[in-house]
Image: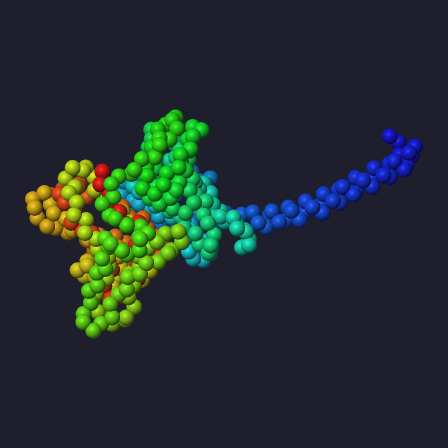
Length: 407
């Protein structure tokens, strides 16, 4: 149409087009700005710490890995590798500098992981969750998340066979060339492969073979510890243990809700240098001779300790576990495991024989070796009791999800 032949019609067309364009801009720009403010995210820096041995980190675009013996910042796309002598802990914090940890990824020996995505909302008023995604190429990894400052976490762990998605919880995954095993320590988690998805809850296990959909969830194993998640607070079968010299203030045992988990806290701040012990104990009284595997697992967080290491007798830790058992020869024995973050003074060559050093302030997922193999010379025949406690002078630590698993 020639505008000169019918200028009125052309004017109306221009007017309507301008009107609708103005309406579109008036609506689209605020909506676009709102969407950007509420849903825009930014990449975050994660930190890798070598728990033992030397860990290799291959940054994105690099051809050669870098050896890491202490803490190092890593970015999205980095590949993390442990050998048969090393273990590593990857930590994602809610904000900089280090504040609350929203996710931790523990790498066992002979494990390779690629950090695919670590993102947080760009603006504080967004209600979107933190996003953490990783690819477990091979080996074993414990993936734990918790909310921080009322913001949730959305986690994804890919393996060669499956995709695991969960919110707040802890997942233990083992990936090999032919199969992925996923054990949910606290959940739930959704495991998907080949067009099928199943939901596994706390204490359940799912297997996924190459090229096949995931199996239905089954119980992970038999847990000999009752109320290990403290959902029923510190009722039976847990008893409190308090040992301190007469007239001195004892430590405290309290039950705390920490994010989505319930934990038992051991604390004492008296500054009197008095040796003491406080904790919880449970009578187990179970015959374990018909099983092939016995494993202790728990989540813990160390917040303070005044006695470095485990003390010179390796008996004073801010968190310690004592399993009392009777061996196959009828002898009553104990197996101890302590945890600390504060080293002995410089120049000391003493290494606590029953202790494991872990990072300060981070929820750490511990799993023991198979105690039947570890204690093969005095193999347990019956588990009599388990005690979880703090020992020393002043301390503060928390434990959650205590389990003694037999298979």
